[in-house]
Image (cartoon, rainbow, N blue to C red; front, side):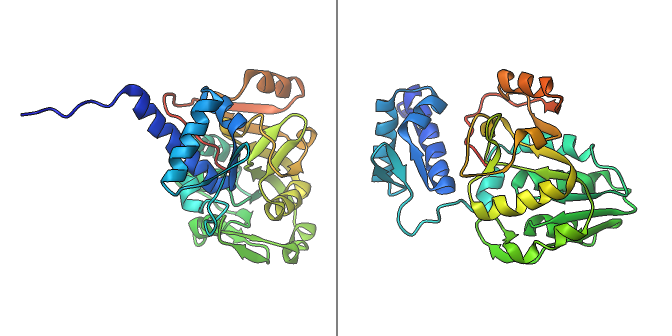
Length: 279
């Protein structure tokens, strides 16, 4: 029996890195060489080789300083693709965040995949008598609709296929009429200076409404969102009540948040896998 030659380790790592880069382009529409070099700990030359290989496979188009999604490809990944990213961390964050909910409350969820993880753990807890969930997430509404003791409320608006969410100013009036105890909000970026931010203004707009209506704003953000600034800020750090994240969040930021009196809850993180940002 003739054994096939083994691939060098560098080739294996390169293929894994390139797959993550391709997913990032699908999700965000564009990437920068400098950002990728810092994220993966390799040289800019190596990243340019990765982009060249991915362009050859038809998965992106190289541009000055980075790459963009191919014409005709969706600039933001589908909800299902994003849901697969950082799944273990989001599940643990969801479990910890669900423990912060009390029966009788009215809570708000955005349409993030991390918020979906919280919703699933609410179902696992069970025993609800009068819990109201306000959400613009179609998947979250479908997950909780009809579950005993949980009432689901959705704002009006337009459906975005990319995030399976309802957005737009049609639903503005809802948040002026309801009392929300806790808003659980995911983000594409989180820094002390810019606060919580999202990749699109449409999503940021409804998240601002949720944050403004809530007594407590609870950020549910895995470590890939920290020290990153997305397109539109929807909640300043000073207005964040609590943060639930995995334990690989940067120490400097977690320390600063605690010094500001933010309730910080870190869950164990699984190590060993390359991860790409996921909103």
